[in-house]
Image 1 (cartoon, rainbow, N blue to C red):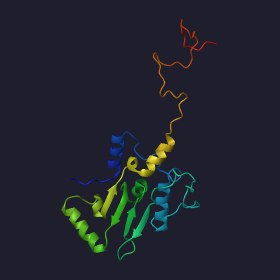
Image 2 (cartoon, rainbow, N blue to C red):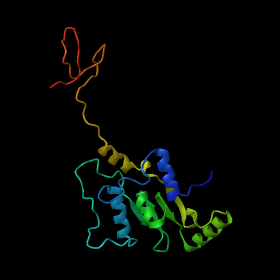
Image 3 (tube, rainbow, N blue to C red):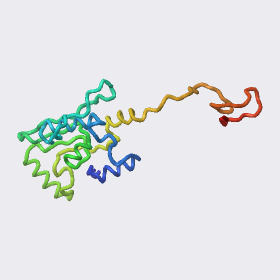
Length: 195
């Protein structure tokens, strides 16, 4: 099986297959807690500069259970070198901004020597420098429609209004008319509103 390169071209193709927008419609700290917390974790690890004169997180804690994250994004340092990391449950939009890959998981090589060996191996396989294994030992591509937080936010946004009539169990032989200006016992029926 050929490995996926989760770049912008792949992401847009996935969006087209799903019939959605090219990028996540909740791609903002103000709209998505996962996006916001992913930014916060990168800032906390000095991998991203905080925006000037702005608080770390634009999304405040909410009492709504739907706003709560199922699992917060986090990073753990790995290996003897301080900058080796494992990224877990991140917003793919955030990691794309940082590394150019739409992924929710990234695992760095354990040592610099492992990294150099993998680079040589990637080039020997003909995958080139744009292949994620050139920089990362493991990665998990993710489209926004597969994100657990997207499902929650999309559900909040698209809640359907309560129907005006509950027709479950009703038996109507000829259908249902909200406005009936005719006689109830027979005769001509006019469903048009008249002034």
